[in-house]
Length: 205
Image 1 (cartoon, rainbow, N blue to C red):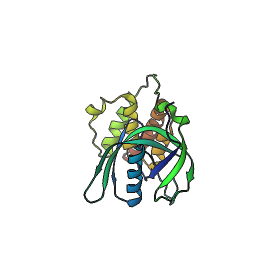
Image 2 (cartoon, helix red, strand yellow; image 1 turned 135 degrees about the vertical axis):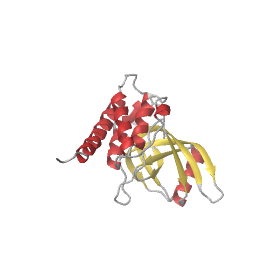
Image 3 (cartoon, helix red, strand yellow; image 1 turned 90 degrees about the horizontal axis):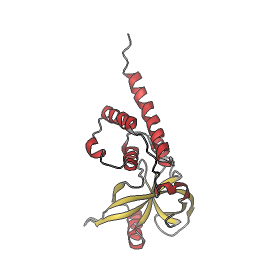
Image 4 (spheres, one colour; image 1 turned 90 degrees about the vertical axis):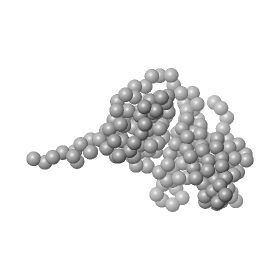
């Protein structure tokens, strides 16, 4: 497996997850994260993203390592970056430091499939059909014609990122190890919402 640093700076952000082979644009303006991005860009361009929990300071256990592949400083002090997702990681422990941002020891072994995706064909027709219905019911527009041009892994990861589901459900998708498990979990979540919508829309005679 390709070598990645076991100690990384991490940006906790509530409600935002991203996956390997997807892109995450970020508008950085807080000083601690300006420091993080500047340090990462000068060092190896690597930083982790992870969901923060509702309780202050707590984070989920799994996030994604990203590489800064676009970096622009604005005159007002903000930094605009784009992160390219590389591989998911498990958090082992936080490391004390004198910096404004947080650093953690992490492990990538559980998610080495991110670097060597399985060649197994995964049927996604049902999932995409349900996603189209679910997105439409929620008033979300997606260019499905362009979406179809993505490879299968990117399709599933993109749906997991942008689907209007709650943080815990998104985290469940993120922590799904295989592509097959992601598809199954995401489809189950959509089934729940679509079933709930159908019940709520029933007319009482």
